[in-house]
Image (tube, rainbow, N blue to C red):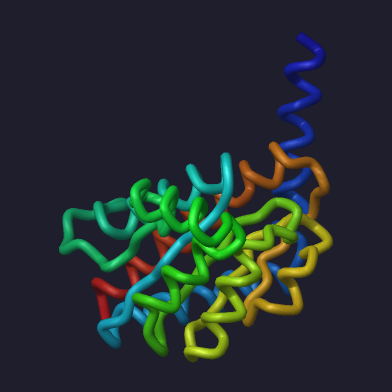
Amino acid sequence: MEKIKEIIRASILTKEKMLNNPVLLETIKQVVDQVTAAFQNGKRVYFCGNGGSAADAQHLAAEFSGRFYTDRKALPAEALHCNTSYLTAVANDYGYDVVYSRMIDGIGEAGDVLIGLSTSGNSINIMKAFEVAKAKGIITVAFTGESGGKMKDLARYLINVPSGDTPRIQESHITIGHIICQLVEAKYFTS
């Protein structure tokens, strides 16, 4: 029983640190504004991640393309790893490091938003996608852990959860992602 309480306390502590971090909160607000503007301008939002972060990326994309709180039209958002034929062909033919950068090169347009989730901030395939995105004028947002890893230097917006513990970081990524979805949905459909 005590171990369960300890894990819950660690999750709460991470979120309290987020709550008391004005830089992080301001960055989240700026990302809400950027994503809303992208949708208002007919642009798309792409998500990418690996392992559990790929599942989180897919989850957040679905919140936009499906619905979050309200019945409304679908918003153009997708997770880049969902086409398994593409993913396995490119990984086999070129290497896993370029699965996201090739996709962004092929479909990304200036003004789109690319959100990459990586607890370490060091996922090479996401970093390569951010490099291509930057060259194409695509807005990049990194969801990482405390240090930001190497992605911090590649992202326009860094959302670095104040933790080094992977499960606490992933829980917080979903919390932040839900905040962004809720506020974008409210802002987009009331403006």
